[in-house]
Image 1: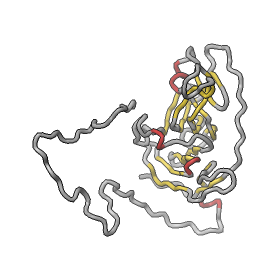
Image 2: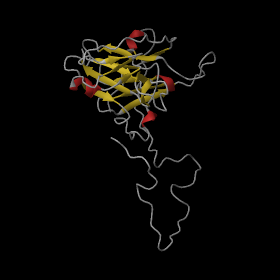
Image 3: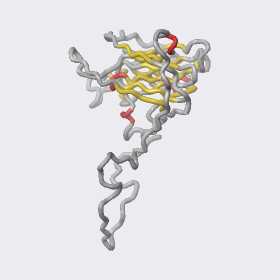
Image 4: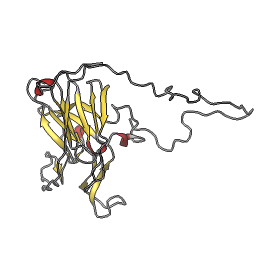
Length: 252
């Protein structure tokens, strides 16, 4: 496990809606609408591989001196965007494209290719069965750190976590404070990690590694032993199998 880069700050801010822009008539340029980016059906293969970017936040070029310098890092929120034929989810043809999970993308702007990403798939979730476990339809951010890790702010859930280049979670934090004015949520607009040197008057704290809990066997004090209290076998019956009860298959 890599050492986490020290200290972070959280910021909140009001939101302003993105202004829609007109789609280009060119067959090679990506279509844009209301805070989204999408390749046309006749777009270049590189653009099609990137796919829809919906409601994106914190799109920026990774600064010089950091791993991935010059690449574009963006929090692709997901949600709803685009125009198309009417359907039950878009009765007026507005917000016709829907994706209920987020992606963090690192894009090489010259090759127009995704060179690193964090999606529900990298998080270990099944798509689409529980892909929405990584999802913030608004706000949020991503920051590349000096050690190559990436700090991700899943804003609507108030979740801030750091992952390695191999997608291992180093640590995570969930904001416990809920708003009481307009949005009764524990949302965090954006998060940054800062070096301890930014606060020179404070002592540098000692960093201690915290091993993650083994959730499959963890028991709270005083709880019953792990496993069923008793088992009954009925002759002629078929036991449980892994696909039982599944009505949707994973796509990734």
